[in-house]
Image (cartoon, rainbow, N blue to C red):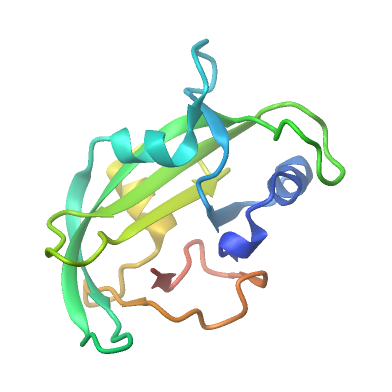
Length: 175
């Protein structure tokens, strides 16, 4: 499975993986239009706004790494998921067929963020079907063997880099 951060969130990158039949999970910037469902006609919505409207399921603990003058924190996150058609951008950048991609959206949000800090939030796009809550958590890939999770606020690699996993899910999530 190909796993990438927001630096790889281009329509061209998504389309190349989808066309080649390669499985991927990409953390999205959320600056694109999507249509809820794979077949249902309806108005396009902004990805991040749609992700925030999804009902959350389950609860998992995460640790938010220390940053600046803030200490390490613990948080509880929930997961939402939905089928989406991701629309190509109005202005073409790169080489791809100008048609929507049938993907799945996985949204992770902090359940009760403390006052004074923005809520923890991840918006993921994948071409691997997400039909259940368990599927969604697997795409998130934050759960370790002991059931805890770890989130870092500092990227481990430059944002534009990506990696491939032999495992079916990524092992770590970044804020």
